[in-house]
Amino acid sequence: MSQTPELVVKDLHVAVEGKEILKGLSLEVRKGEIHALMGPNGSGKSTFANTLMGHPRYEVTSGDILFKGESILGLETDARSRAGLFMAFQYPVAIPGVTVSNFLRTALNARLAAPKGNGDGAMPAKRGIAPKEFRALLREQMGLLKMDDAFAVRYLNDGFSGGEKKRAEILQMALLKPEIAIMDETDSGLDIDALRIVSEGVNALSGPDLGVLVITHYQRILDYIKPQFVHVMMEGRIILSGGPQLALELEARGYDWVRNGKETAVR
Ligand code: ADP
Ligand code: MG
Image (cartoon, rainbow, N blue to C red; front, side):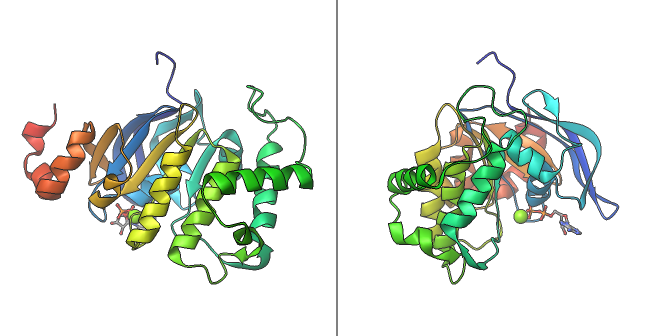
């Protein structure tokens, strides 16, 4: 574990329409780790997630985001994705006429077309995956995630339930094999079914080759996902970090406990 963390966020300051939202956020995530970033509404969690993926509306005014040792601030969203960052959308769009399978093959081919590739031989360095090969891969991943085959031929997100949209996202993640995945679940009003699906997917996919950042204000997701690291965010920065026991404390005592005990709580 002496290696540089895949994702290093250094004293990040971000403004939206001239207003500073992130005020010095620092965080490190390595492959193989699951982190939970928690905080009340409006603390800047989604701002952080969107900034990580390079949403043009979020202006980094100072600080840096390093991915695998290099700053990605100059990279567009698609380049960040090809490099191995993945973000699950909070509100996935429906694409009638495009099947789940078609969409995923296009997404995978875009990822495989990465100019530098992975360098570790995990992905073929060719331009695309053959249809037959893709179908086999898709079937395998859907099997692992206990998904019905019929799902692949439905139109993407068209008439999907919340839980089905989440399944489509998790499947995309399974195929793209990102090194770091960011899941912003904050305001999506996930029902317990969707929450369970996300959690089971994360648990099924997590391992030494994947780092996960689960962003949420719900403590209840942590009944299903067991992060090794829990961070509490307030007013644009992380004010407290700890192990899994911190999530339990939050569940029992709420955010006010952190807010009020800030001076003594932060080491
Ligand atoms: P969280 O996800 O923790 O609930 P957000 O990142 O969504 O927090 O919001 C943090 C703050 O930034 C809020 O005060 C919100 O009003 C503001 N904000 C977020 N996105 C935008 C935006 N696109 N335009 C203007 N203000 C925004
Ligand atoms: Mg949010």
